[in-house]
Image (tube, one colour):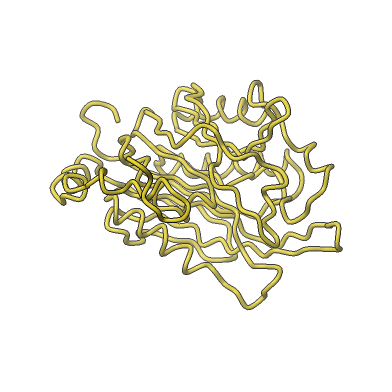
Length: 300
């Protein structure tokens, strides 16, 4: 955050995707401009917004959607947009890196500089969300990025269910957490609605770490041809911005395109975070069990 600057305006975008890259990128740009016109400084676009959420199926041809990080056309376009408007843009994309593939996000600063890359760490694998077929587990670790307006932590979708990820970013100094997302109905169980659960988990991250949190999700019904016939997900939107006690400051509904905004005094939040004591009273030496899968304490 710039010296002396207290107020930061964050934004979450929400829209339905087509399966045409140029159409979706144009929609994202239109909404970024809208958010900027309303005063936003850091604007979050949803996960893998260039097309349909293709992970409903395991199909070889979907690997053609991936592009290398370097000279990625959508990232370059968003760099130009960020520089023009003076805004920060995390940009989600399907990354090809030689023979590896990642679900990644590039962080574009307000002058158009690419600050670096985060690769999704937790890769889901279940009906409708078969990401392990496409994505290697991310190898960047959890990172924070010093932007013009704030030091931010960015993780991706399934990462948002893991409190360890949120804590790791805030321990490194993240002042705001951002989660681009693609989540909706469950093809195997039409009665399962995870929306409220999804929101409460992230509200907990905000409250436990005393930082604002921004979640951007898509809307709309997407049908994908799979190896077993057609699969359908209705994405439930409900993008939201939470404050540092976990309260939802502003939220979208499940059907409408939206541009959410909220303003935060990061200096005031920092003082509250420091005085609350949760980082003062941590006992890292007692948390070694978190380094295990089965809950057994590792050897000293």
